[in-house]
Picture 1 (cartoon, one colour):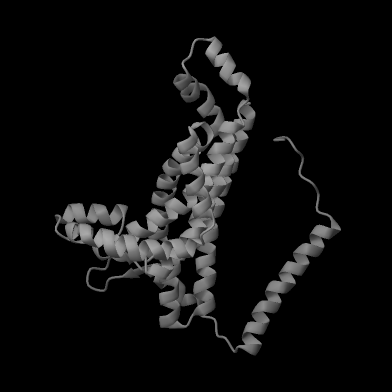
Picture 2 (picture 1 turned 90 degrees about the vertical axis):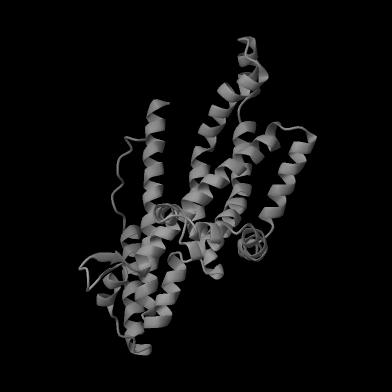
Length: 294
């Protein structure tokens, strides 16, 4: 597969390229003629970085801040979703009757609720009731400046901490349901002969599962899991509805203030594409490395 030769361009390929190019050209022409839209791309770099006139230093502006928040939100959500989905997947595949029932209830409930509804439910119940009662935001405000900066770097600013935690939890629970099914499928996909071979070597059921079955299951599930992680990045855009200042939210704020609708949204689209495509290429690289080893 790795030595597969590159196919030459065909007439169909050229026709597709010409059609896409003509479509893009037609879009921009209609933008100017019908909407009388005036492009202003020069303003966009200033929304990534701005120079403080007093100190002369550059600081992150709204788009870069939003990009950073999207990264943090995605990383936290993916980490929690992985742990939650793995536990649920193991219970679904190897648990007893109660464990399997809990896993099925979690998966079927979450998968049949729109992610937007789940995010809003979490925001109004978890953030407004639970986190406010715990005083999490106030606790962050009372910490020393270095601790506050560290929390801001890892999570969010003190005024945004409740919404950020609520959004990360909602996304993690939503994505964890899909990860649960991926892990359960990976475990069930390992042949029964692996169990018998491990037992014949004297391994206990727990060690057989931990040392033999689970590594093979994760190898089988690695690339579906990676695809789910990419989906988590894209799904993070929905938390803009609860005012988490991630990339989409910052883009909407900028659009309302500047009316640079198309410049802002094209830029945001490219940022999401860069993020997800980079992850996709990284996964593809490791896929080839694993193919070589096998």
